[in-house]
Length: 337
Image (cartoon, rainbow, N blue to C red):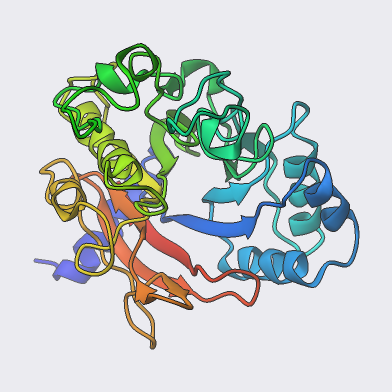
């Protein structure tokens, strides 16, 4: 009779030639706060010696995640800013040969008066708040190939098409700001997409990512608070097969929900429903400073950035890497199938 350790070694030895391995994959999310106030300004900073950019790159390189979801990164038509960021990270010794980024709703002019103030063409009249097209988009960097042609994209989904939505109403109980405009509103303030990453064993790991709007900066109609909640709940409907194709396991949902389960503004039922969804593991990474992922000057520390693996995955380790380049920490989780 052989002991458990010897048996495990023997089993692994027999399986390795067959290509059956349990490789640990590090997935991470990071709101790098690399958005700028005008088009082209981020690219200028990325090509220079901008202190914040260098600090962000240092954080990403130190984390050395295999798959990294980024928020707060300006989009452009040729993905020039993202490619330049890739090169900057590579200079620090970490290669991300693959990426995924789609045009966000942020800054895309709607041509409508979305906030009902009688004016159009303002940042709040874009499909997602923004001074210019693509301000504050989201992206994925990966050491493994990304099957972009298989992606599910919910970015242009109309808000009214979300099951059980909580769209705002006027004081008279009518759609806000009016029925015609409300019917055209998009739900996603930046992007909502799911894309498979092909792991070394040839199997896909689906990455679901988003960056929800802050649930503040609105009026009594609570437009942003309601939108934040429904941006979070979109994923609950996806996971339960009510939107798009049923999400195959394994997958990881990660991004900036802009909602703390206990503190600050926002509809807390929405983030609790997500964290308690039976398809997910509510991993709570932390470091010596605690489990908060951002520290805002006015409201203090909050947990708003999440990495949530599907139930069947093995969580090996997790943590938060603080950055001198962003108020947000980089949140990472090590997983195996």
